[in-house]
Image 1 (cartoon, rainbow, N blue to C red):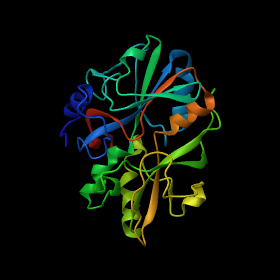
Image 2: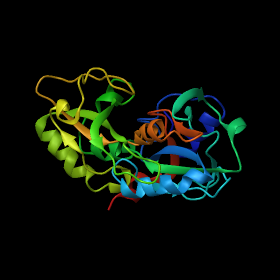
Image 3: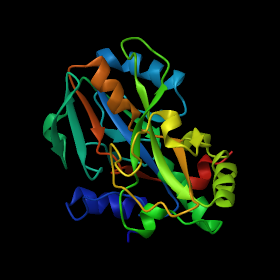
Length: 259
């Protein structure tokens, strides 16, 4: 278990860690990644601005620069994330653990808030995070909740992450997370998965399934994998993202994003 964001990033950069980041560097902010050519950057910026629940902006890079001045001083977007997905015209064409060879002076990166960043607050209040307990990636699902259109990013379904709780803990989780709007904030849905278009909760679209015990309520938060759905629809020439659950971990603390 890595204690700080820098320790974890160093391990990732050196190839010593390639897995999901939930539960790692507890208390440090985690972020989703999207990288696009400059020609597409404004449309994506507008998409994020219009859809702050799934795409809460934490940092936007300078054109051509892979280095992060805000969430972590001098971290490298090309090497400091455990696993990347590469999309070309909306189709995933590669998975990488290093994108240095793909980087272009034309690229702009976006770091978006991640729900892993509020998990420490839930744990501190005695709530179990099932995917951490079971050492699995968080389950994520494509829903029938549609994002607001922006430029060339249209008709995009929202992706959600799910954590199961007892009914009283579900209400408590909703109350705690509403104070973290920069990392998705309060849930978008609690209860019946079918109401948001999820046919089989035991088969997530991304991540791993987790145990849903009798009497527990599935609680769904907007998820930063949503831009990958946007890429599939808008089909930009290239878009590089984190692999679901494999996040950028910064040096700022989760508490810095509590309102």
